[in-house]
Length: 78
Image (cartoon, rainbow, N blue to C red; front, side, top):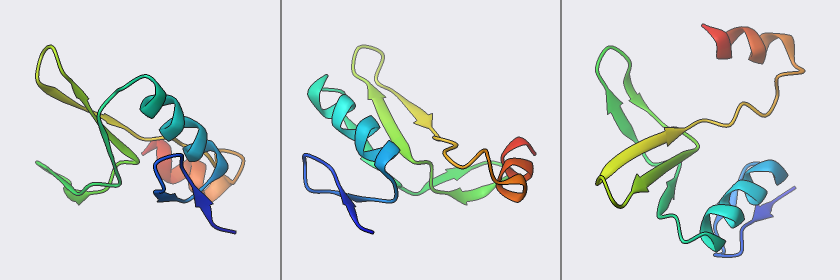
């Protein structure tokens, strides 16, 4: 199935719709799956990259939505 946010963004799950719509309603600037280069990890795509407006700092938010799948869970905790 396809999932869309109130802003019309396509996301991967119902949980991500809820998160994105909550951020949008709270006027929190965010980007969905925006590429980020992390030292030691290379390019990663966190679910949400948020901007703390007051401090002008980015916050990376990864929603681990499939923790009931053993393989996914194992990769998430490493």
